Length: 304
Image (cartoon, rainbow, N blue to C red):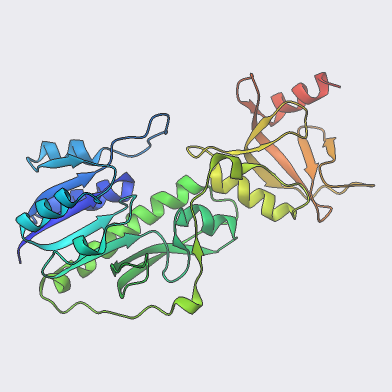
C-alpha cells in the first residue's frame, strides 16, 4: 500500500490519527500546526500523539514550501490524509501519493463547504451536519465523495457539542471506508456543487449581535460561537457584554423594538426584529466575571 502521510490538527485530526496508529497503519510522517497564541485549545495534541508513537512530526504553517513537497515525495506515500489541517494543500503535493489524497470535512458535503463548517451549520439553523471523506482537488471541498456520516443538531445545541459529534462521525467514516480504500475499491461519488454553498472563515468581530434579526437567528449566533469560540457580543447595555448562552423566550411584551431590554422576574430579555425576545442565561459584562441569569439581572438593575 505504501505509507501514509498525515496532515492533521484539532479534535478530528487527533482522533483520526489515533485510530490509524491504533490499527497499526503505516503512518510515516505527520504534519501539524503550532498552536495559535491565545486560542483556547479543547483538543489533544496531534504532535504529542505522533511523538509518543515514534512517528516523525513536522510543525508547519502550510505545505507551500517546495522543500515540503520533496519531503513528502521521498516518503513515497500510498495516501495523504488531510484531517482538519487548516491550510490548503498545493496541487503538486496532492499528486504525490500513489493511491490518492483525501480530506475529512466537517459537514455533509456538498453543504457547508469551506471554513468553520460546524459554526456555519448552526448559524444557518441546519437540523443536521456530519463528516465527509472526499478526494482532494485544487478546488476546496470539491473532490469526489467516498463516505459520510450524519449527526443531528438540536435547536439549543452549542458548537462544541456538535463539533464533538462530528469528531465521532469522522472516526466512524474513516474506520468504515478504510478497508475499501486500501483495496482500491472505495467509491468516488461526484459532488453536485450546485446543491451546496461555500462559506469563508469567521473572525471574532463577526460575533456582534444584530438585534434587528429574528430571535431564532440571534439565538443561533450565540450557540454557534460560544466558548471555546470567541463568542457573541452586544453594546446595547452600554458596556460591551459577551453573551454566552441564550434561550428563545415565550414572553410577550408591548411597544417592543429591536434591542429593547426588559427585566422579567428572574432574568433579562432583549427583543429582536421579529418582536420576539431572547432570554440571556449566561453573560459577561466588560471587566466583570461571568454571570448567570440572576446575577446578570441584578447587574442590569443596578445600572438603572
